[in-house]
Image 1 (cartoon, rainbow, N blue to C red):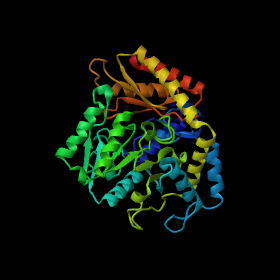
Image 2 (image 1 turned 120 degrees about the vertical axis):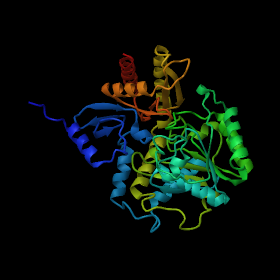
Image 3 (image 1 turned 45 degrees about the vertical axis):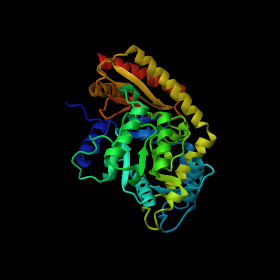
Length: 431
């Protein structure tokens, strides 16, 4: 007699029946509940979650401040549409983010629903302010799955597929990657080549950059590159947009990734960990630039939903009162030490351990000399890690990079457990 199917198998069969294949799911796991840095599937199996909703849960699953803020707001109003009537959580959140990002300068914020929406609106604002068409992004960038988002994204598969034609006046320059020999000087030369051969700087509305590339492979932009980019954009009247959708809210050791370099962007896109798991994104920027679009040019029915704004205020309270930045930075150092120890054991296959703060990754190669990408081994390691009770996912243009996005509240014991599990997974993958 055949054994009865597990609940997971039944649910995944229903998923295959009812959800299109274009929505990829990294793990054959159906999650039932979660807390902090842990999740449990429908069979009751526990996993350490070092994906965190792909960087959404920097304060961890079901943080008590977020739960309390949403529960309290739910008793008042869940949705009104800010374009119909204003409400306090939206205004309060805008005020707090304007101060956190703008400091003493006048900044303003608009709230939306997804990261891609934030990116698209930042481009609209920049074009409206400059009256210029061109936008420069970087090779290896990821800026969303809308048509404009995938056009800005700096690699082809799986995002571009056969979805064109794509929006015009989008250009790409090289992003620094010291492991593969792309220095700050070479990346700046690539940008100057775009100016010389593709679009003159006086026709460029914006340059958009991730302070640490996310899906492109967790590549940090050197501080001197960001400083040079700020000088170039200021000189040419170009709006500098920092995409902080994955790097924001403590992921890199600072509240925002750009802060380490000492620059101040004109516009900042935020999402992911902004609202602790609720869908909310935003654009925060210099008031004169943000005010360029006239009334009706910005908005969205669900943008700045009252529950999501309340959750975001709970997230900011957690950062202000619970020492999360320090805890996240210390956890990142502990995780990096563990990954670097593993690299020393497998120096021919782990080409590099990189990232900032708790935004860390390892690049898997076929051998240290050639640095050839090994996506197959990366996938086997990810699958073996799941067997060990650890959830991680891949990234990188060639999908050979394994990224770690543990919640910043992950304990030392959980980090040590994850490093040990990942070490066993790597050894098993190597055979």
